[in-house]
Length: 234
Image (tube, rainbow, N blue to C red; front, side, top):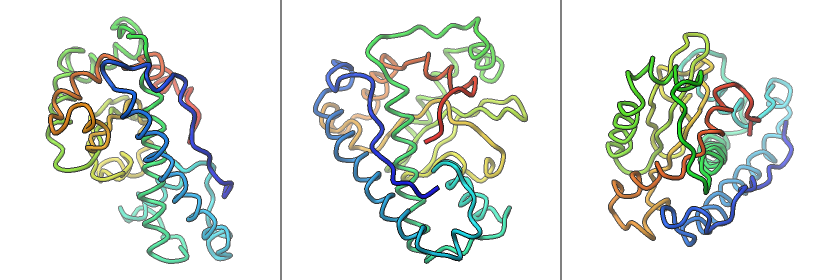
């Protein structure tokens, strides 16, 4: 449970998403920002492993599971664990979220523009939830542009209710921290980072241009794999 995490590898070169996402941004984003979240998370995991009261009570197999525990605690849906301190808990929430969210974000992208198959099961569910693929893209884009300050936009899938949702969170919060999703088992299919570090080098303060460019590098095969439950937990 408390094994140190390594920076997840990216399956493509840092310049592979040019001209949409530039090499300088990709290099900085992965080797500095994502690495920092990984390092800070590992420091917190060490503190958790040294807290006997916590290790006796906690049961999780991934950082995603640990984030869900925190979300359920915040929502009053489970008894709080005996965390070493509020600071350690917040460090896990912030940096665990950064670790997981960035892992999905980078995996969701690729150098080959793959068309979204509306006839596949994922495409059918998308149309069922939003009316059309184009409507989904419009709503997702609007959500991305509507995030105030730093945050994320996600497409989630809740198997128990067979529903897809567009979710926004602040800072590095995982979708489970949205009150309506805590404890529902919602799966993250698609993640878009709208922190300025994700686009400022190339797009300056024009987030709209970054979001428009991002649609050109989505790896829909990865998204579909997550929908089918085939993606490994981080």
